Amino acid sequence: MHEETNWINIATMIFEGTKWDASDDEIKLLAQRLLVLEDRGLSKLNKRLMEGGKKIWDTFAEHNFCNELIQHNLSTTPILYEQMSWKAKLSIDLPTS
Image (tube, rainbow, N blue to C red; front, side):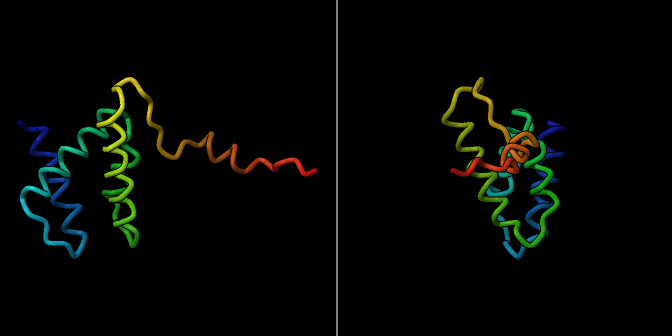
């Protein structure tokens, strides 16, 4: 119960950083989704949402999408978020012909 209360407090804080007047159900849903991502090792995405900022709604969209991926895939399917190795691969120059 204590862990659930903690996630509800975090979800409340996230919504308080926006102009959206979230209902209790929306806060509870966000808290559940935060916990799901944390359990799957995606704390970086949770942290980004908690930090807010100008693009918080973009982050909400990523957060919701990631939860959908988790819901519709096996629990053993890895879901990675902004891995450094991806960034490194993207910076490699492609050969030209």
